[in-house]
Length: 356
Ligand SMILES: NC(=O)c1ccc[n+]([C@@H]2O[C@H](COP(=O)([O-])OP(=O)(O)OC[C@H]3O[C@@H](n4cnc5c(N)ncnc54)[C@H](O)[C@@H]3O)[C@@H](O)[C@H]2O)c1
Image 1 (cartoon, helix red, strand yellow):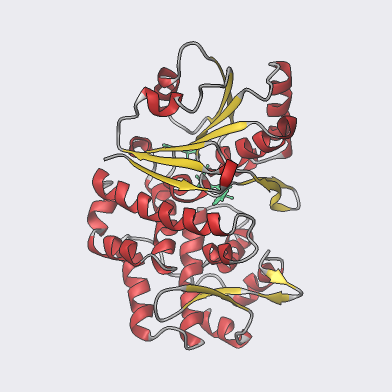
Image 2 (cartoon, rainbow, N blue to C red; image 1 turned 180 degrees about the horizontal axis):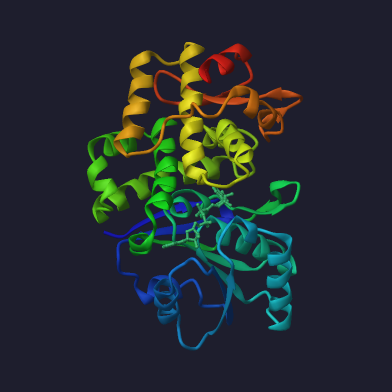
């Protein structure tokens, strides 16, 4: 069964289509009708078979160009952005033309930012090929590039025209990248999606063996939660903050590790364990819930041991976190119903205690 979920409001509402292994030509081309030229952006870590598959699906009447970035976070840069924009100018792209992002969150974020700013905005389609991009970064319209001063410092909120998700891309995804996406899936399970929590709890083996039916289910439930939250709060002025459960600590771990040797999802997983521990120490959840958090993560073979990260090492990264408002750190914690909430009312010593 093919599932469609919608996100966004009014004119910027868009379809997120979740298919299994087969993608029909019409599913993609109905969104390319008015577009004459297409620049497909990918990176050299995305296996070529996925690119070939998408190129085969695009209507032969369209002029398609391919721009390949180097794989990795370093490509979310001002120079990639500049190169792509110059290419669009050279190819004389106008507002009837379109970009396609075929890749993980890196490709999606850069492509989205190019689309948002070229000629003050042209269409773009997300075809996410990592689990993380499928359940998280391709939906919600956050686009960004990094600077030497930090991650995602330049960007915009700009919704795609369409998101096409196929489980077929996940066949080639390395285990560490797959687990990185699972970290985000579990996040939705902990911040309010009880159906997803049950699916994950009941099917860890099928998830780890990439069973297509279960994969589609967990992607669908993740997207349902993400699309609902981002549609209610497109520009992160309120409820969207709950999507950052685990992120204050996770970003600190990534920053401390210089974004090396740990995937985004793995850092967020550790961040969720710390945030759950703080929730426990603050009296919002009980020990049995804390045990559930650990059991679910461990059943998916995700690393929950954050002992090598010390409070004294991570502290400075909390302060520079985007969730600091008026000098006060805001944390996303969970309550007894596994619902996330934002608060600046917590004892600092409980963060220290959680990390000891
Ligand atoms: N916009 C948002 O809302 C949002 C949300 C979360 C994360 N992000 C961003 O997403 C980025 C991380 O994304 P990511 O985890 O997808 O990493 P990524 O884009 O770097 O992809 C990880 C690696 O997997 C490779 N790859 C991609 N698809 C593959 C496939 N099907 N088979 C084999 N290899 C494949 C890539 O070439 C890359 O080497 C970060 O920059 C983060 O800031 C954005």
